[in-house]
Image 1 (spheres, rainbow, N blue to C red):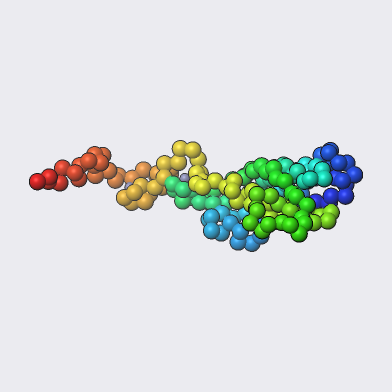
Image 2: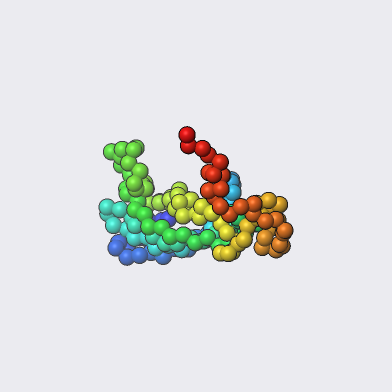
Length: 167
Ligand SMILES: [Zn+2]
Ligand SMILES: [Zn+2]
């Protein structure tokens, strides 16, 4: 995804609005157990000034993953926001400095920045619903849709301590 700086330079200090749609790279979210089900939609404003280009906006993408408690597949819309500075690249750039993004010439490639922001914004745990009852720990029945006859063996977490002798 490339932003063209020519327009922004001619309107220095004024936001340029842009809407984009792109497909996430294959396998990007595999490790997280998530799968994209739509393109990623981006709406952003970018603004040029001689020191840096400010890019801010929001993105959204439909994802599927498995409920953390019951394991059911969940389809959800993930929204995220971003605000990043792109500095003009020159030879003095120290490679270790990665607090900013860089651009050369009149093109700003925002693909990595968008993916970075998407990845850091993803939920660690997905629930199919706020009050998902999860699975029975004994028979693994999905307690959202059925009841089982298993009973917890004990509610007393200290029960096992009564066997310990201190002598
Ligand atoms: Zn669930
Ligand atoms: Zn059960």
